Length: 259
Length: 361
Image 1 (cartoon, one colour):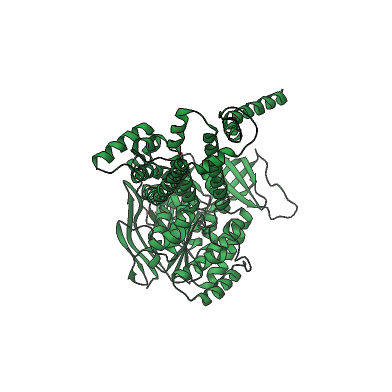
Image 2 (tube, rainbow over the protein chains, first blue to last red):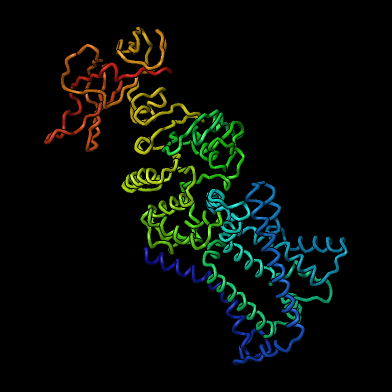
């Protein structure tokens, strides 16, 4: 009985993982398919990748995405960490709610409200407005990861630093900040991945003429799922994978903290 | 002049008074212990001395200088935390060097002083390890080395041995006594473990509900508790409630319901009619199959109700005629004799009137 139960458990786990990863595997697979249709196998080719390299619009969109994600996650690292420190220090109940609200607010609502906000303030839509919009939700991701790390930190560590002669500022630089680094890196990575594949908020705040990778893919898919889309998706996946692996090498605790 | 002086310190948290009008003087070179149950305010008082917290009322003086509002980094006072609070991202050597770096001691000097400090706590050669790689006792030693390296005037220790197992705790207690004698620095030690307080301290301040209820040498605190709380909290004590009947100097008799008038002594002025308890330690109670009544002794009869064999001693719980239980302690010092009494045996109990203290309610 126990053996059959175990087999059923493994089968269920396998099904769950299959559900999660088979679609991704299919995308990767078809990015190497020679068929013009993105959903049919017709022999191996690297042609779609070569095509990508010559697709100026696509490259431009990818470059935009990268710049936005970098700027937004760097800004979020600074402001998200500050927000986490403030909520930890002052223990105000409404502050964490304000910081973390973007995580639970529907993207469409954020997109529309940011658009209205930018128009009201006469901010021209484009790369800059997307960066600002992404920063606003990325802060929440950094703040939540850094907060959990702060909450898990022994409060007597900071007191010990003060006790042994460190000014509040030195105590922060020599003890608090180094201990937060894995959380800050993990939060930054999370923010980066959230920014690079964001569609809805970007769509509302991009205005005419500025495109990012997800917007570009969407535009292409409106016509048909081409193998070129599969190829760009595969590259995006590879990038994320490399990021996750490198961060887990840099700070093994960081990913544990996210779980 | 006392090295450390606390004058009328009070600290409130909302409606809760954690420290209530505490006055205390601690001398240079003293091993002083704050002893009390959890929530009695001893850790809050320690934090006031360290500077992590400031009193709502009162002053704290060090060497006659008012340090009440001085931030912790400017006080020549260091703390050994219950959690040790070793910086996990620094090696043992960097942890120990931290106070020297903060004080801008030349780099060349730091290395040799750290090496010496590690040798002093038997951790020579462990400098490059990370705190996570150390055992509990080793972490403890690093925390102490770190707190002593720049020779503070006062070392505060917040239940530093609570996380260690019994054997290691006993060993560390001996090491702490030796270390304190060696460095001559004033130790203020916080614990809820009365055995630890008795073994380590020159003087003990017993705390209850934010107040220091008794201050004195360990033997004075143990032998002559001034309140029922102290008698009960430190060691075990038989407590018999009653009313004072007759008085003669330091002697008095106490009317105890069901047992009649029992002789006792008092160290505080008392009056006939005062209510209180008669406190007598189990080891002061003689127990035997038969004891001839002697003048100046309290004499009671009972039946062995329970016995706790502890190896070196056995505790007998004896039930008196009125049903109450008294404890008597007998050392198992006679060779070859394992048991003196069985449960159900009729026994006599006796103690000298001087051994029974009357304590006011």
